[in-house]
Length: 193
Ligand code: GAR
Image 1 (tube, rainbow, N blue to C red):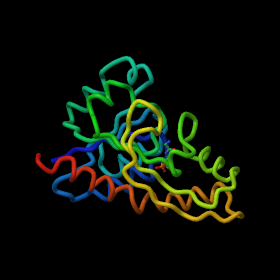
Image 2 (image 1 turned 180 degrees about the horizontal axis):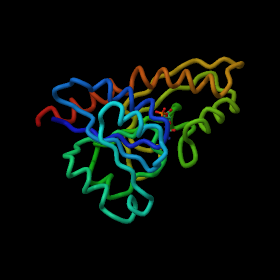
Image 3 (image 1 turned 90 degrees about the vertical axis):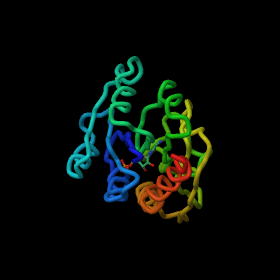
C-alpha cells in the first residue's frame, strides 16, 4: 500500500477531491492530513471523510523532527501539497526525494515564488492582462515553486474576468487533473515495489 499525507493550510477543496479520488483504491490511500493552521477548513473536511488529521506549529515543523516521525509512524511514502503555504524544510525534501508534489495555480515559472499563493496569484495574473492562466503540478524542492514540472494545463482568460473568475477556472482544472496526476506519478515511482 502506498500511503499519502496531504499538507494543506486552508479551505482544502483539492484535498477533499484527492481523498475522494483514492477512496476504495486497493494500492493507494490518503492516510493523513496535516496542517499548520488549527482553524483550517481542510481539517473538518478530512474528519468528515474519516482521515486522521494533525496540526503542527512553526517551531515543531522547522526545529524538530516531530512531523518526520509522525510520517514514519503512519508509513507515509508520498506527500501531496494542496494549498500548503509554508516552505518545505530541507529534512523533509531529503527524506522524500521526488516524493513530494505541489500544485500551483498558475503557469510556472510565471507568478511563482514567495508570496505568490492563492488569490494573490490570480490578482497578479489579472493585473498583468494575461489572456491565459492555468495550473502547474511540480516536484517540490527547497525553493518555492522551483521543482521540476510534471504537468501543466491552461485556461483562457477574457479581459472581463475578475480575479475571482480566474480562480474558479483554475480550480476546475485543479479538480480535473490533480488526483489523476498524483495517481500516475505514484504508479510510475513505485512500480517495482
Ligand atoms: C489552490 O488553488 C492551490 O493551487 C493554491 O491554493 C489553493 C488552495 O485551495 N496553492 C498555492 O497557491 C500554493 N502556492 P484549496 O484549499 O481549496 O484546495
